[in-house]
Each structure stands twice: as C-alpha cells, then as structure tokens.
Length: 291
Length: 290
Image 1 (tube, rainbow over the protein chains, first blue to last red):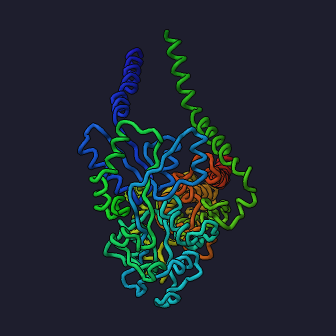
Image 2: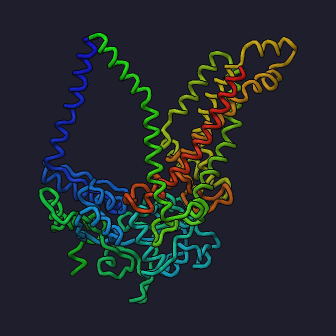
Image 3: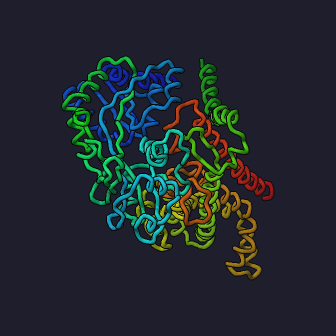
C-alpha cells in the first residue's frame, strides 16, 4: 500500500514538473498569429523567413478567418490578428471595454477573383450582375450570356473576411446602408480550397477567393471597371495600379504597445524583404501600390 | 494510519463516481447561462421560427428554423436508411450467422464505429458527393441526401450493437419453445424474438438517432451549409451542429451572435435529451417486464 502512494507521489511530481521547460520557452520568445484564411500562407511565409534569421523566436500562424483572429486578439489569445477586413465599430467598442488599445497596420493588398469552370462560356461580368447572382435575382447562366443552366453559387463561411468583403463591396455594391444579403440558397464553403474544388468539378458553379489562390483549374472572370469603361482580368499588374476593381487591404491588428519579438517581426514584414514575400505569394506589396 | 488511507481512497473513488454528474450539471448551467442571455434581445418565437439566419448583419437576424429543419431532414434521412439495414444486420448477427462469422461481423461493426467522423466526411466528399450529383443530375452533390447516407454509416454501429444485446437478452427457452411447436426459423424470429426484444430495439433506434443529430464534422463537409428551408433531399441544408462549429471561432464573447450559438446548443441539447429519455424509458420498460 505504501509503495502505491510513493508511486502516486512521484507521478504527481512528474506531472507538475513536465510542463516547466515549455512554460519557460513560452516566456522567452513566441508569437501567436491568428486570423484571415486568405493571409495564412502569407503569414506562414513571413514567419518562416523571420524564424530562419531569428532561430530563438517561435512563431505559430493559424487561420480560421479574420473574425476569429480579431476575436482572439480581444480575448488576448493571440499577439497579432491578421485580417482582410476592417475591424467593426462593435469590435472597437468591445476592445475598449476590455481595456485593450488596438492599432491597425496595412501590410499588403489583395484582390478577389470570381471564378467559374473553364468550360463556362461566360468570361466577364459587372458588379451589378455579380450582386444579382449572389442575391439569387439571377439564377440561370443564360441571363448573363451563358448556357441554359441554373447557377450554383458558392460563398465562404461567415467567419471569413472575404465573405464580409464580398457582402459589403459586391452584394451591397459598396453602399454603407445596403440591406442586401447572400441568398439563403448560397452554399457556404469552409475554405477557399473547398470552393476551388467545387468549381473545378462543377460546370455551373461560381465562387470567389483571393488572387493568391488562383490556378489553371478554374477560369477567373473579368470584372467591369466603370472608371475605365473596360472589363479587367484579375492579374498582379492591374491589381497594383488599381485598375482591377475588387481589391482590399491586408491588415494586422495588434496592441498599441509593441515590444520584443513582435516589434521585430512587424518591422520585418514592412521591410523590403518582407514586402517581396508579399509579391511572391501573389498579393500586392505596399510600396509599389503607393507609388 | 491504515484507516486514513482507506478514507482517502474511498473519497477519491466517490469523487470519480459523481464527477460525471457534476460535469453534466456544470455544462448544463453554463449552456443555459450563456444561451438564455440571447432572449433579452430576441424573442423565443422569433428565434425558433424565424426563417432567416443572418447573424453578422446589422441588425442581425437570428432565426434558426432553417437550421432546425436542416438537422431534422438529415437525421430523418439517416434514420430511414440506417434503421432497416441496422435491424436486419443485428438479426443476422444475433440469430442466423454461425458462431465464427458472428465474431467477425461484430468486430467489423465495432470497427465502423471507430472511424473518426472527419474521415467519413472526407471520404464522402470525394466519393459520394460526385456520385450523388451524377446519379440524380443535380447542380451539386452537396445535399441533405449525401449527409444522410454518410450519417447512416455512423448510426449503424450504435443500432446494431445495442439491438444485438437486446436480442441476446431474449431467453433461449422462448426460441426452443417456438421451434418445438413447429414454427420455422423466420416465424420464430418474427413472432417471438422481435416482439420480446421490441423495447430494446426501440432504444437502439433512438440512440442511433441521438448519435446522428449531434454529429457535426461529416455533415459540415458534405451538406453544403446553405441556410435555406429545405424542400427536398436533393438540396443543400445547414444543420445546427455545423452552424455552431463553423461560426463559433469568429464570434466575440458576449455578442448576440455568441449567445445565439449557445441558444442553438440549448435546442440541440433539448432534442438529444428527449431522444435519450425515450431510449432510456423503453430500456427500463423491458427490464421491468422480463
């Protein structure tokens, strides 16, 4: 019986001691980055390059959506929230009520592409038409010059910054007081990957994701730009000079006071090297877009 | 000293014994506390029977009727598929199969229960979904039907193993008596064994339903998640579980959306509670009779 309790004691001692080195490591240098799925790969690329130069820093990048990242920042479970949309009034109020001063920092620019199956004859749309498709006012491809087939409309889930951006800028056409919504019949997909998969397999589907995800399997639609009176195909150049009409800033939200590894990392992201990674990942870097 | 040890050990075992009840209570209280906060802002009727789920709009519209119906449709479909197959499977294992085959089949069914639901969801996504689309000429295979078929696989092990226990509990004498009277094997199963085990069978079915309605990952991957009121099995649906899983990460603690997700949790809890209650009642009924 005594032996049993001795063992029990040793066991508990071990359980208490095992986490110690980890706690210590967490104390020294670790950054939690969370948020936009659009930016996960970008954040990962930054993190890898940064960790190569600073092996003592451990950076963990996770996705889940912009809202997830901002929620985590407000709940103090991450250091940097990656976001592909602006923080809402409500979120600012919540931050204030939690005693957290948040700063906004743009780190790059992203363009949204609308994609269809390569065999779909439709290759260009206006933002009005897109809005009608996503609110189910247009439900057949023949209404926009395609075959007589019902349109299968795909969207990202609500935790996605891209969802919110498309809701505000496309479905509501950028009107602040717009009340249009995604039609209930719109399929909510869990990731950009899932949308790409479905569009690849499905001749009647239309979906959207960030320019960085675009590949040969799907066809990107040209979007009408009323300023130039032309349809513009999504590509890096036109996103850079602003001719492609559907672009948005990529943001970091972080606490006002930066120190240690987080500050180093942010400086790295804004440096020339960090911004060249933005271009490598098919997003638009800051400096060039300002020039 | 020995008495002291005795006391400590007894105490530890007692705590472990009542731990599950305490946890259930704590979870239930937390669920109620968070979920009921919603009803300061939104009416119960509006919440349960509202036809529009737009939680992130301003102002949010938090009607979960499409989600409740989505869950019920998928569950109904899975029940229709899994109950006949599960019951037949249990009858074969329990009554007909020879001993060696019975062991293999039982192990197989248990193995089916051991497959993680995300794996089933993934397999469904790449095999079943395109198949459903092709066979029924649908715009997409991400439908309630695909979800039902995949969930039927998950309900089967529960139905088969509990029902097999129920069949085993029927005294051997019943069968021998029936056969001695000149009844065939099928007559014995249909007229004697199944009626004697009926309450156990109902319990098996109910627990299978309970398993299905709470399932999340697989349905989220293959039902399309469109929050519309379903009119047929060939349409996408959005279930309550998938809604909670997909949206939980995004909500800020303390927002209406956050409370609404907990309120959905309460609805789910209520449904599974009723289902389990029925299952329990029919199981106890059986014990009282035998």
